Image 1: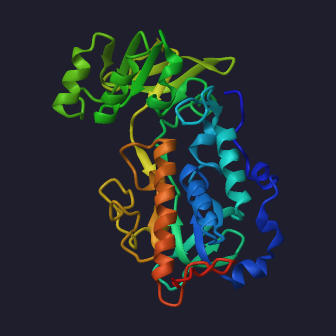
Image 2 (image 1 turned 180 degrees about the horizontal axis):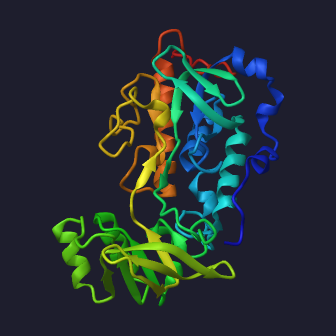
Length: 358
């Protein structure tokens, strides 16, 4: 990994427009739109809401939700986001999005949300520093984080061979040997996709049988580039000069240890949506993702919308997250325009009236 993730200090140094608003002003005002989350979904929602003259307030970061800027700040080269034919670094893409949102008037608070009362009118949020923020509408873009192995070497080699997205990073492992950890449909899908690039894919699964559907198992079994290591778990990831070189594997039946050389490791053991702030209030599916009233982004609470990976367990791409962020901002604008006592922003200019005289 050649670039470090953006820190809260790095983001704050961009000259946030919120610096011109005091804490008293932030807390005294009832904001039209507040957005929680600063990944592609939240920042795209901010661009659209700001261009609609809604003066959105974006709160960057949620407790345990990952780095400011979302998972893209942990990614090196992004080559599948439209508009960048030569690719772009993940942190740079997020920085560009943030600056664009700020250009149109988005204000930022770089801290965590610790409490969310979404059934009140207005919505009330509490931040880590004690600020109370109120809003007529709320856009939740808190994302999801990949489940980790929590083994030595994983954090150090994240972006240096360790990944949770074959679609994002598979291209970089052409003619290499890679490992996929998992036994469900996602693992089989990742392994099959990776054979487009890798010379060999080893699926490591801690049980003797896969959990994947029969059709997904058959596709993987028939692929001559995929091999399986059952009853095994990765206990450590090894690397040299910031690049992965292999893993230590323990046999779950006998406890015997072995070493597997590989250039990359892809986690396919699920994601954890960052929804704990809204537990028992907003509807979620069996996996914990927020449920929205498709094709809108509306949750079961009026005026509360969700976008990005916190409601999408199917695609989980930067571009799809950005698309739902656009939808959420448009949904919030329409909600505000129709809400009692709230009107859409009035234009600065007066209309020229056409004459009907003959």
